[in-house]
Structures are given as structure tokens and as C-alpha cells.
Length: 183
Image 1 (cartoon, rainbow, N blue to C red):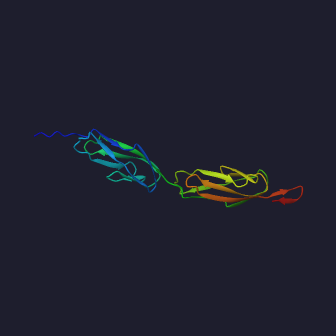
Image 2 (cartoon, rainbow, N blue to C red; image 1 turned 90 degrees about the vertical axis):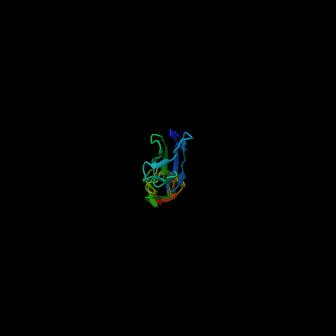
Image 3 (cartoon, one colour; image 1 turned 60 degrees about the vertical axis):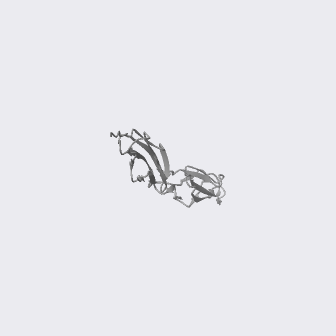
């Protein structure tokens, strides 16, 4: 009796790309062709095990922010393989500002607020800025400009997670004609 061995010709992973957040896990599967191949086993591997790991069943676990490839390779035919590009995102966990209070003393005077989104390796560090009273201060990209006397709050909100940090702005203008401060 002669046994004809059917070798693997192709491996197909069920996803070409995948996004996970740090700590998340998802299972990939591999289809081995032809259907009548004798040895349909595959070896799973990660191009960077610092970013994500994969077990022998295709379970991918995200460890830190980055982009890597997860590969499924045929044991029977190492030239038959497929990959899934995995993007691991680190979600934001908070935001802070370099100042919580600030006083400006003239129209047009400005100050720079610096927002720090945490953790340091957060994938999306974009921040939205808002003034609670644009007749007192206006803000764009962290630059606050005094436009009138009064008190307002500058709010920095992280795009990822909606975390907020605030700085109370006081604009106290000295009126040289009257010799008094306008508040």
C-alpha cells in the first residue's frame, strides 16, 4: 500500500488587522489548505513579545503600545504562512496641567498651559481646550489669552477617556487712568 501525503499549500489567518488595548486578548484562527492536508497544525508567533504574545491556540494578549505581526506558519510547509497586523493601544488614564491657578494683569497677556496625558505611553495624547468664559480668556492649544477682567476656568479634556484638568484664570487689569484695579 502506498500512502500519498497531501502537503499544506496555504495558510489563511481569519483577520488581516486587529486592534487591542493593553490588557485585552482576542483569539485568531488559521485555515490550512487544502482541506485534505495531512498535517494541519500551525505554529503561532509574535514579531515582538514585548508588545503582544500569542499562545499555541492563536490567543493574542496585548502587553504594551505598538504595532506587531502575529504569524501562523504551517508545520508541514514553512513557506505556507499568513500574518495579522496587530495594533496595541495604551488607553489614557488621566490628565494634569502644569498650573491650577494663574493671574494675568493686562488685555492680550498670555500664558501657556501644558497638559500631560498619562500614562506616558498613552496612544492618544490629544487634548481639547475650553474656556468657561470667553469674555475673560480665550484658549487655543494651551495658550490662554486675557481678553477682559474677571475669573474663568480653562478646561483641558483628554480625547481618549474624557479625563479633565482645570486651571482657574483671574484677569485683574490695572486702570492707569483711574489708578484702580478692575476685577
